Amino acid sequence: MPTYEDIRAYFDDSGRFKEVVSAAAANPIVTGFTLDVNPFWSLLYDLENGLIDSRPWNWDAFWENVRLWRSGWWRSVGSGPFFPFPMSRNVGFQGFRRRNLSAKVAVWEEAMAGLGIGGPISPLILTVVHRPLRSHEGEKNDSPDDQTQLQRLIRGLSERGADIRFEERPVARFAAATAIASQGNSTGTIGGILRDKSGNCFGITCDHVATKGDIVSDPAGMQIGKCIASTKRVLLTKPNACDPAVLRAPHPFPGNGPDLNVLDCSIIALQKGITASKMAGLAILSSGQDVVLDGAKTNQTRHKLGSLAIGYTFRDGASDFCFRDSIELLPQPRGPFGGTLGSWLTTMPTQGDSGGWVLTNDQPPRWAGMFYGEDGFRGFLIRAKWVFDWAENEVGPGLTF
Image (tube, rainbow, N blue to C red; front, side, top):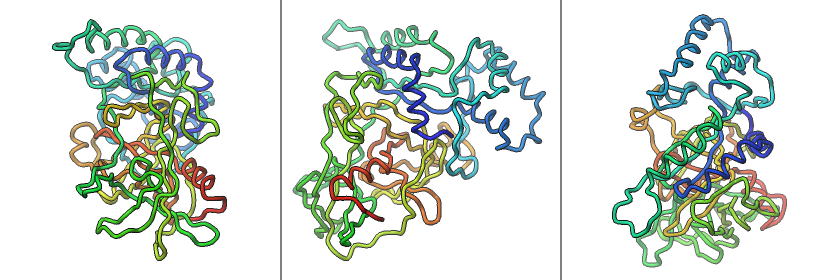
């Protein structure tokens, strides 16, 4: 897939997508926006560029399927026109892949014409995420109920293009657990260790796990270090308006504020004698890449990198926080099926896994990102390059793994 930088750049250059997100963000049920590569475009790109062996393909059957899609039978399935079956994305291992979003794919354009879609269509799919719908009964205000708001949302955007989807999801939350200990501190995961030129060791985790000044202990209660730096998250001042087109990005970048967040990180100055697994460095990331998360709660779990969450709301108690450009972490089923059947065969990271490092399957692995939030069906990570740059800014350049 294209890199996440490529996807973000495509959004920044797309006036139409920006108009869509700003219009949708005004609806009170909308909580976020994601962008991902259309799997149909990706398949045709690979075929046309010789990245997949085209010999097994029956092109007569392919064009017959295009005619079926055009007839509209997929609308009754509810999974979208280009990926109608709830199959798992776990179809063989996939490492980093880069594709050119601006490249002309002749078969793609023919297929779109066969579907009756006039004009150019984006190789990306924009998903407008809304929170679970609530009943209007018992509410003491005159605002429209959620179902009415959903109808307004779909009516207002459905004519904007076939590359826009709507999806109801649980509200995302930070993935720290509350300890039973008398201090009432949060618990999470120290995902990995960085070292400076003097050999000092620094554990990296999330700000909502440990804040500057906190004493950090292991599960047995033994003190292992002290938090010496942490990011400060800024609140979303206007509820349900996490608009990636208009909210001001942090400067300098990466950072947090004035309107939204990119980081949720803290640095633990560790006591001597701490060891860590060997890593090859920072990873370059693309959608669909196979990765592994090692969390304190769920241990080692297998995942694929998913969509780019260009603007996404996270809830902490009664407070909302808007995060920009997080990456979805999709659990891998131990079988060929997705949907409800596939979810029975997966393990989702959960409360207590915040701060866990996400690593590639290379040997030795590379650091892909840091897990910090979930909604029960998917996780979210901050890319490792941003965490690493922030850490070097706090403790000095020359950090190593």
